[in-house]
Image (cartoon, rainbow, N blue to C red; front, side, top):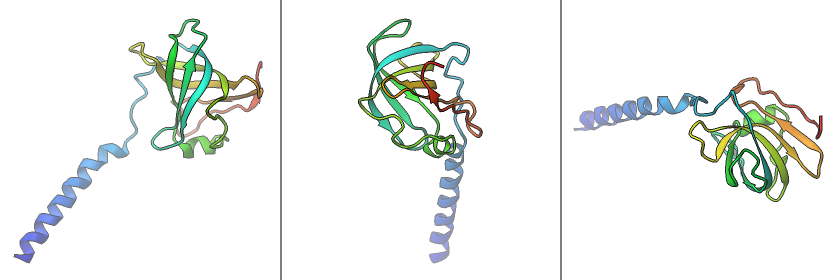
Length: 144
């Protein structure tokens, strides 16, 4: 009886482990239109600094080529952002920002961050989600 339970437990663990393998793989960025960038301007509503990707929610209040409303802007993992020079508090709720994003291909209010400028602080952070292993970041005054 014990041998039977041990075999069932081993088989179950193997199946669960195999099912988890796809989760370890990174998802594609094909859902973002990498050939086009839209600009959204407004206020940061929320920042989720969590795995697998940090996310910034921005209320677009100046709809010039991008729909008004809350946009969900995806970044890399917090660890990837830290390696690229970001800090957990680089962008905070309440910050006034302009963000350039590669919009979702389906046209909904979401995308991958390309560049974000903090209006009052004069800081600009850039990030290309496609460069997961070697992110590109520029810390420079806004307007350059």
